[in-house]
Image (cartoon, rainbow, N blue to C red; front, side, top):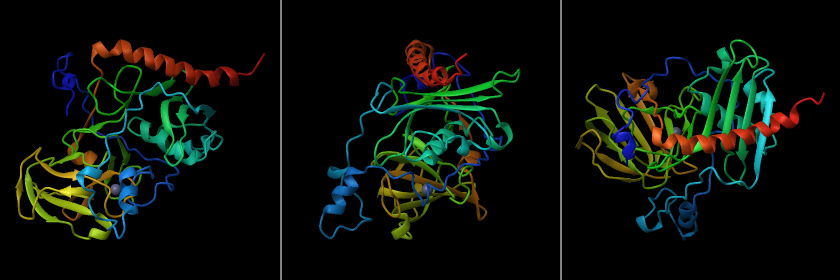
Length: 346
Ligand SMILES: [Zn+2]
């Protein structure tokens, strides 16, 4: 599951930029749209198929033959319905998106912010006059798909700082991700997380403190790994809300919950080794789209998995940089079209 270029990084060490989210990721975002314990609603063909079956248990696991095939990677070349939006920040990031040509400017703001939450503390770093640029697509029933995004802090000033993100699928990766123009992956990854790969993190404790876990959007049937060695404490408790679920206790006493699974592969009391496949992800219980809810507790308190596991940041290998740079340049030029047309005429 780990791409070859990551197993054998051509750069030599250190090829990973390790880092922890020491900086706070406080957001003043409008995240009210992301209610409940799930990523934004999305089309789930298999769930529909199950729901149409007579007397189907909405929490039942989806049988393997009904698990949908992996979606085609979207890549960066889709053009239909592409929109560009650029705006100065006046009061807050979410307010800067209010004029966006989107059915839900708040959703667009949330998707945009989720990209830069790893690098920018909106409350501390964002000031009036900073600017947002975003290139995105809108499709019915799903949150806006951002293709490129840029945040310029202190534009034109000595302390100008630009953070950018371009959607790009690296060779060997299962899903497209977002990469900065220098080839650094924008979203960080848990060092020893429960999924080898996933579409995206759709909820972090730091941007949604009332939700106690981290949500990974991933297709039904994705392998869920025991991040560390431990013992299975329980399975399938509170099934109506959690769906199929597993709880592990690690050797340091911390517990990890895995919710909304399609299939559990372990039994209560069983010992598991680090990296062992313990379940397959799903969309069971109170969940509106295929995802994994992952939650850590220690000494009775919720712990942020980002702090517990630490994070790493990948970098594109040199042999992919020319391809990526060409695509990023094209996306960047599309971002700039709005800037050019919005410029005051002399
Ligand atoms: Zn969740």
